[in-house]
Length: 278
Image 1 (cartoon, rainbow, N blue to C red):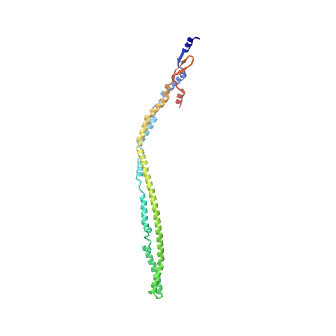
Image 2: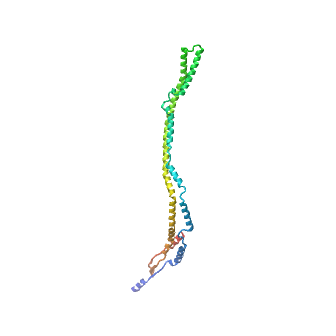
Image 3: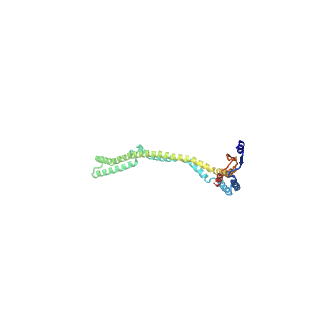
């Protein structure tokens, strides 16, 4: 074969459309027609009605705004109860202080003790005087001595016993005041901590009260934003199906021997139908 005929054969090129587009185009056209007529952009009547109900409820505000504000106010104004514990300790100290300080150790400082000793001494003296009178020796020196000894013997055990009781009372009062002081300090500290915690809770409750006060306005803002966004969301959903179809199709060129081919554009039909089905 000559060189001229070989060049002529290589020069014969082909150009035209090829691929599955001739089969897919009618189906895609039908799909896009149906998609365009399907609508679905914007609110439905039921959606509009639901938004109306929500906005009406929001306009009425949070029904618990006042209660929430009152709770925050109560928390911030929690009363200090530790003073009551201090008052109780002061009362106890006043009542037991004399015993704890030793001011009541002297039995004779107690009027009731004095009266009892007087009664016991008189009884002892009367008995002894009666004995000496029966013997005809009343008002004698021995009568007076015996009477003095009898009174001492009758009253001394009472005095010693009462003194020992007073010492025991002193120790008991001192221990009671010490323990009460510790308990008072611990109780006051606990009450202060509880009061501080309740007052700190007022910060959170105050924020809740503010949120409750702004509930209506914030809810209406959110609902209006949803109303504004709804058509765009619908359009975006439709566009995600419709726009890829616009790129469907393509052309293909090559030589007569099929040695080369070039595709100008193409589209994955399976991907489009998959999106539509999803």
